[in-house]
Length: 163
Image (cartoon, rainbow, N blue to C red; front, side, top):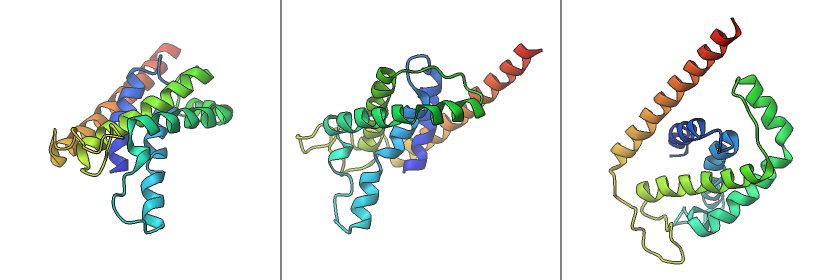
């Protein structure tokens, strides 16, 4: 499911990039699934979504991710320059973006996966099943299409502004 997160995360991060650190927000949606990878690699069984996939623990992970990303700021700035997206950030923006990125992932996974407990320590998942798997996947694909369209339009605008 992680590839599906790029569409909604990219779209939201791109639209709100004035307030959200785009690469930190988008990559937070990948960082959180390290938990799933570790559970699988270590054969820990079910559930595969554990404490990282909660709003409470996810907030701490997101804040840590934001700080880690801040330490790699020159690399992120260079990457954003390569893809021609204007980039201005600071440590607070990166920390908040890390938290929001994790929460965004938890929200989507909470709707999609039965074993996510977003409001831990409560064990029930009141988000699961709000939309069907098919609906969520299509929403993610459509978001990716809109994100790509907006990105291409911004590149065209930049080219037009230079002439």
